[in-house]
Length: 150
Image 1 (cartoon, rainbow, N blue to C red):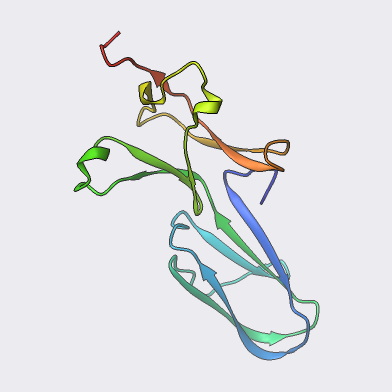
Image 2 (cartoon, one colour):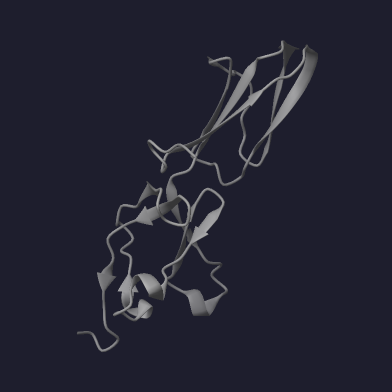
């Protein structure tokens, strides 16, 4: 996880142990629709990078070569299938492959059904090192409503 900007990019590097001409296939997850990039020894990869597929990095490798995969992971809203009537008007919040939720323990004096996240409310991710051994949390401003309209 990129602690400087957890909402934007997750970086992972792989060091090659050996050499020769071969392909390295890197999975580009389908949820990475906001972009991904690959670098070899700090130089940008110029091949195809398509979400939901594998990027083939073919070259003559040398021991110590480093491949870095950058996956964009901004928070996003995911709408439910329209046939699920119980979830009409609701969205899930995701960042990368992780599904987030509101929890009663974080809002002890509220009924979670009364919290609304406006569609235009900005969302951000923040790395919290002291929570659960270090996790990225999502932040956004919600609105408290009541069933009777008050």
